[in-house]
Image 1 (cartoon, one colour):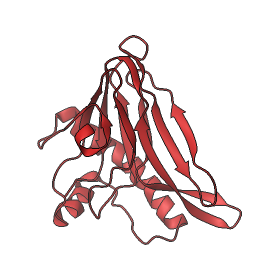
Image 2: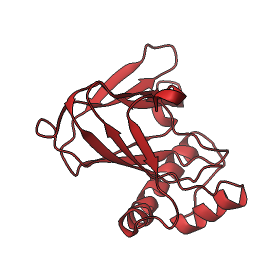
Image 3: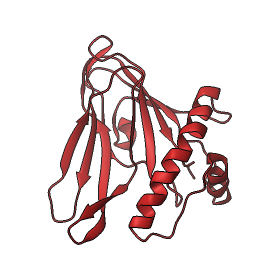
Length: 181
């Protein structure tokens, strides 16, 4: 991660064929998220609509040359962190993703909180720390989400990251629904 300026820690993208449980997670979570993504796009007057099933969406990615799977394992040791970022891997970006914590806070590691920032127009960024326990899944926007304002619906930009791990080892599974170029 450090070599690319993403922070410190280790990440490993999974290859096709994905482990069955990861492929199943993508397939089963996707339809509900596609519905949310389509509602966001409709509220923002964005023409793009996402298909109801993940396999059809992956075909769209693959036809565009985005054929590399994006689910990954992330491991952070003492002093490791993940800088605020967005997981954009090509022209086709599914607007939601998931992270599942695979370690026990306070037992396996300390620090390493999952962090989200939201930037609304003409405002300073707002930061949220999402408390997670082992096995918890957080679903969050990849790039932006729709927000109802006094002048209509607008796009709020999002970034996510992980605060510095103070001790131990923190492991997560990242489930990104679009494939990479």
